[in-house]
Amino acid sequence: MPAWVVSARESAERDRAAIERGTPSRVLMRRAGTAAAEEISRRYSERLRNGAVVFAGPGNNGGDGWVVAGTLARSGVEVTVIEVAKATPAKSPDAVAEREAAIDSVKVADSVDDDAAVVIDALLGTGFEGEPRGTIGEAISTINELHARGALVVALDVPSGLDATTGQHSSCVEADITLSFGGVKRGLLVARDCCGEIVVLDIGLDDPPAKTSGKPVKTDAPLPVLVDGEWVRSRIPPIRFDAHKGTRKHLAVVGGGKGMPGSVVLASRAALRSGIGLVRVLVAPENVSPVLAAVPSALISEWPSSENQINAEISKWADAVVIGPGLGKSKDTRALVERVLRNSKLPALLDADALNVFEGDAKSLAALLEGRTALITPHVAEFARLAGIDVKSVLANRFDIGLDLARELGATVLLKGSPTVIFNPDGARYVIARGTAALGTGGSGDLLDGIAGTMLAQTLNSTVAGCCAAWVHGRAAEFCEYVRGTTLEDVVYALPRAWNELEPSPEPPVLAQLPAVAR
Image (cartoon, rainbow, N blue to C red; front, side):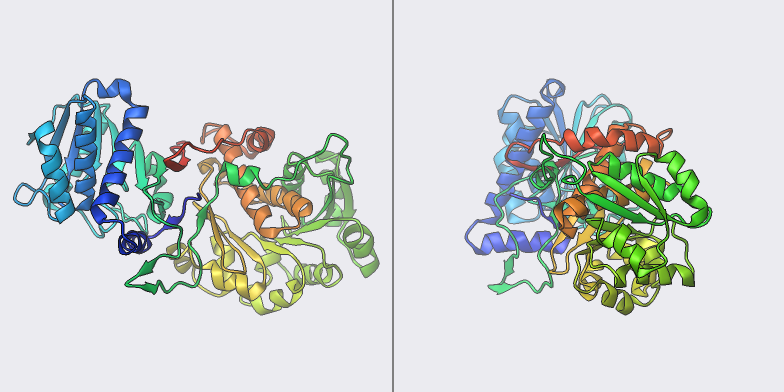
């Protein structure tokens, strides 16, 4: 079962749909709390010997916390509960019921020892927006002080104070692990620094689209899928023992404008370390020698100036073409991109200046891409230029913004960022939340082009190519372990490991897990 990426509203709709189909809301609460308690016990049994402290808010997140408290206490753990809203310690009927069920087996206290070993944050859930105030705000500060003293902090569903949809926060819990119920909240993927490791727990919600009040939820597309190692493993084509450079496919890379040979060098090296059979790089005349010296195993040509050259060196030779790395932005650049696309129907990946030359003119690009398998890989600013909108709008709507552009272009849109979101023209969305800040440097997108170009040539599927490439790109950065001091050369050398050491599927009830981000 996949892990879905949801906003606060979508999470509530899925819960509501399950309730309308006959699962009582208290059953969902008990499933969530019990699964969380079991995951905490499995991971931190030694720490739990020194007890656990649960900070319980008055809402349903607090109810989840009471289930965790009672479950841990019944297993022999000494549990202390800090109720932050003494006047109304539990508001919802379910939270009241779970408090009554657990209160005789736990200790209720007003304060906590400074040496607390395991602290469980059950203050605020997915419905929270704004700024935590009063006793809730004070409790968040207390949890963070305990964390600074060495306590392990577990957040239930979201770190309290974090907006589950946007990831915005003025003050929130700093967690070592966040246990997200039923799906992974969008805000967790945007604000990874606050969340620690993210573990998605199955609580028995059906696959979307959910229904509310007996009517389908109004949505233009199914919920995004969180891509994991098993998803990637099942879609990477095998390389047979008798494979050769032909069966491993050929990739053409058009880029490397004046003063920018490094981009195609990075793309080519990434393609070669991703399993391509042969790379041909087409660059500005002055870059032929430096690129040949840097990538001696690649074929090198000057930019194509005629239909015959395009046919010989791209259309009839390659299985896919990457256009854009280090290309430069000019009228000549646009003419080159148009010339290649008009004279070839190969699967194509466009990035960087191959997109920038169509600023505000997506219609012309759509005409050139018509009838082919295509993938575009813009970062946020490149997307904004192409779509004719501002960068803030892209960032604020990163999980939805690419749907219209993908339909208009008839191409898969890979919107790079943290996280990366991939939009298919049919409305499907995929989220890749792997990688580290080591990828936040010039040339990182060129590596991605080489990886994705290889997959495009070998699968002829733009969505599979984009998803697998983005996941492996991020995984390679994770294998480098550090952020400061890691270079793109380190990421290139980690690619073989990233392709071959894919994580196994998690054991139920865990649907997905993401490591804490490297700093």
